[in-house]
Image (cartoon, rainbow, N blue to C red; front, side, top):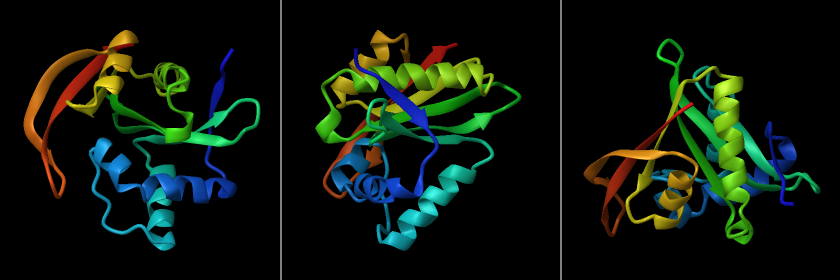
Length: 166
């Protein structure tokens, strides 16, 4: 059986996380445009993610080897209304093996158990059909589409807003 764990980032994860941050194609799928990707900028990004009082940032690791295969985060946690935005990233060489599903299910469980959230939301590019299918299969539903919402240098994309009651 495939297993992943969500754990706090370690210093030894830096190069792996930096490689994800520096991948402009991946960042565009994440609805993100990164201005700077030198070591200092990546370190600042990681520090912001790790110390955000309204979020959590975890490394997705192979349970057997503890090697990082991605990251998961909850951002914009609204403590009073008990919701936040979730997202995961799985490195390309670890995709297609069901690890994203396990990681997302673990993140949803963490949102409910540790952060006491009652709803989790996410935004996904409309053309990211693999991710949308995964989210739907674990109980997310589409609540709207933001037309022409995300721009890369070459294209303009619709973004789908999804939610899951916990």
